[in-house]
Amino acid sequence: GESVGLHLPTLSVQEGDNSIINCAYSNSASDYFIWYKQESGKGPQFIIDIRSNMDKRQGQRVTVLLNKTVKHLSLQIAATQPGDSAVYFCAELGGGAQKLVFGQGTRLTINP
Amino acid sequence: DTAVSQTPKYLVTQMGNDKSIKCEQNLGHDTMYWYKQDSKKFLKIMFSYNNKELIINETVPNRFSPKSPDKAHLNLHINSLELGDSAVYFCASSPDHGSEQYFGPGTRLTVT
Image (tube, rainbow over all chains, first blue to last red):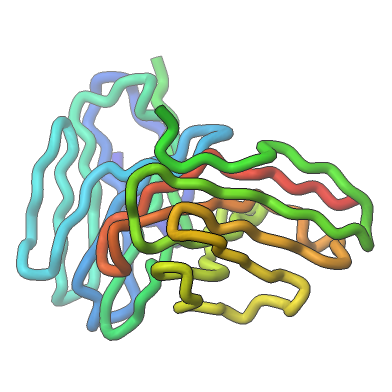
C-alpha cells in the first residue's frame, strides 16, 4: 500500500504486507529528516532519521528514502505487524531554522 | 525509567482559569520544547529552550509563559484559559537543536 501524507491521511494494509508512507516536505534547505510514530494516547516516538547527504537509510524493518530533487521522503515498513498501527509523521529541520517542522501525519491501520 | 515525563496527564478546567503543566527530562539534554497537537493531530512547536534560555517563541499568545528553572525542567503556565486552548501538549528534549527529539507522553488539556 502507498499513501501521500497530504492527500490520503489514512492507509490500511494487511498484516504481513509491506507499507509505504510518503511525505512531501516544504523547505529545499532542510538537511535533516525524521520519521516519528505516534500510538494512541502516547507521544511521538523516533523511528529513523536521515541527513541530506544520504538518499537511503535502513533500520529494523524500516527504510527511509529521501529524494531531494522532488522534496520527497518515504518510510517503508516491511512485514507489517499489528503493533505498527499508529499515526506516522515526517519532520524536517534545517535551512537555518532551529525547529522541527512536522508534516500532517498518516494513520496506518494493519488489518489482521 | 521515564526519559521525558509530564504532569498531569489529563487536565480539565474552566475558561478563565490559570493552569500549569510540568515537564522533566532525565536524559541530560540541553534543549527542551513545548508542542501543541490539535484535534487533527497537527503538531506545532510553541517554544524551545536551550540551557534555560528561550530560543524559539512561535506566535503564541502572551497567556502562555514557559519557565525553565534548570536544564532538566521546562514548565508551561497558561493564564486565562480559553476554549481554543484545548489540545494535547507535548514536551520534548534533544541534545541540541539539530538532533532528534524525545517526546513526553503528553498532557490532554480540556477547557470547558
